[in-house]
Length: 108
Length: 279
Image: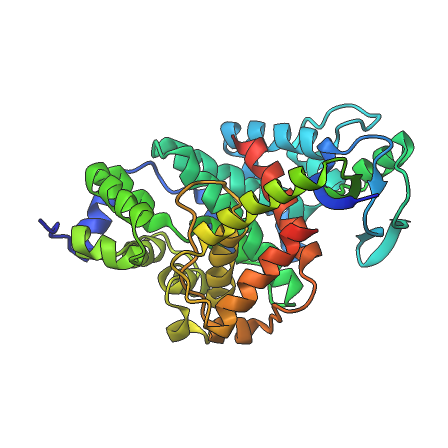
């Protein structure tokens, strides 16, 4: 089974979505609410997060695409990234590192 | 034909733009004074009914959706429920959005400004730098372009076309048409509006930060704009990354080889939400 991670604004998060990373909300420096990675969100959880003013959540979604569809999507993502970096000198370490950081993020 | 602009002329003409929102300078002036700002913030916000209405609307939709209680009807209650810092951020963004709207600016300009503002705020927190001015600096970093678009829309459009077609830096292209670049105009305006020196420097040096790295806000704003383009936050065809200052990254202590997924994800989710709210 393939999965990918998405960071969603809270209004886009629905019951049943699975956390892709541990969630912890701090209020005045004290953690007031936490849920583990892999937890399936309930309506109550969503209400609790709203009350604590959470803004976004990292969710893990099943990737139901075929290998070909995934390869095509990745090719498009990489082409877009190359277009954005078309004027960058990737021989410079700082530019190469930034490029790789964004590329790695897009891979998740 | 290069326009013949003088610093005095730029300032004089800016007076025919919509007034720069007073609440922004008032909030900035009290950013370091948490104990004194609650009453002052409520007072400043409530003087402007348009801003009050928008702040309350966003406060309701952003934080109270699904909450079992009545709607937020006044700024003081919004502060008590959502927190001073968030209300301050919403007020700054709303005020500047109204200003940009009053200048009849295209929505992409504002969305880019919001994206850079959120990037700057998140980068400041991530790198443990003071974050008080980060949102403001990000929101205002391209304010010089707003002046250009308002008074010389044709030349401004020609600059944008040249930027999206080639690889030449925007400041060089602007100097060919305007004689000056948007960083120069931005510095003049920010100084004229009485913004803090750190914000003025961030606006002036955001494309060429190495001269201004004594101020960490310069590094934050520079890296924030690069990152907002690298992450394609506005999805515009013209998004491009050409240079990033290694010295600015070093100043902030950013290690690009660590797992930055949570930071990038936070920035994307917050920007998407904010652009939706302000669209």
